[in-house]
Length: 284
Image: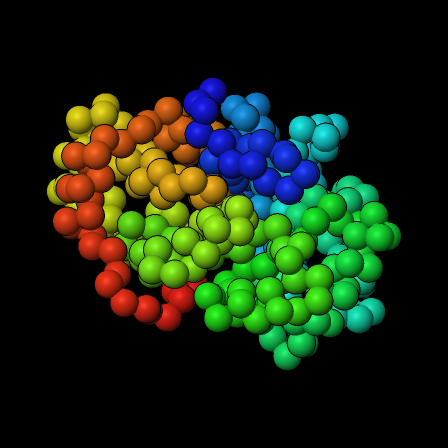
C-alpha cells in the first residue's frame, strides 16, 4: 500500500482515497453489484466509506450496511445529515435512522451536509450530544466555505470540527485560494467529493483532455488515476470517488501508487490554472 495517507480524528490513519456512494442504492437491481464493489474496496484498503441520508433517501446507507456486514471494525464510516434535520430531536431521529440502515451502533464521522436554517451553535450542540450518547465518534461539515468555517470557529465547540467535505477536482480549484490553506493550518483533513468531476460533459472533457492523457501514458496509468493522484497530492486531502464496479475500485486504488512529478504538475497547472482570486465554493 502506498504511503499516501491522511490522519483523521483520534489519529486514525487512512489511505488518501476512500469510497463514495452518491447515486448508489437507487436501483434494486444494482444493489448487489454496488455492495460487492464496496467490499472489494475494503479488501484493497480503501476503508473510508462516505455516504449520506440524502443518497437515494437512505438507499445508499442500506447498500453500505450490506457491504460492511461482518467487518464493521475494518471501516471508517462517514455519513451526513440533511440541514433541516441538523438540530434538536430531529437530528437524533435522523442519526438513529441512519444507524439502522447502516446496521451499526455508531458512525465514526457525522457531517452537516450543507448549511441550512439551524444556527451553527445548535448543530454543534446536537453533535456533542450524539457523541456523548455514543452514536457518533466525531463530527464535521460539508460544503462550508472559508467565511462559514471562520464563523464555525467562533462558535462554542466549533474547534472540534474534524473535516470539511467539499467539491474539488482539476477543473474546480477554488478551494486552493483560501479554504484549503486554512484547513491545512488547522490540521483539518479535507474530503474531496466528485474528484473526477460529476458525470457529464465536464467529466468527459477531463478524461479526454490531451494533457491528462499524455501524462497517463507516461505513467502507464488511466486518466482517472492521474486525476485522483492530482487531487491527493496535497497534504491532508482525501478523495472519495464512487466506484460501483470492482474494476473501478481497483482502478481507484491504483492511483495511490502514483506520485506525479513537478513537471507533470506544471503541465496540469498550465492546462487548468489555479484561481488568482476568491471564487464562490463550487457545489453540486
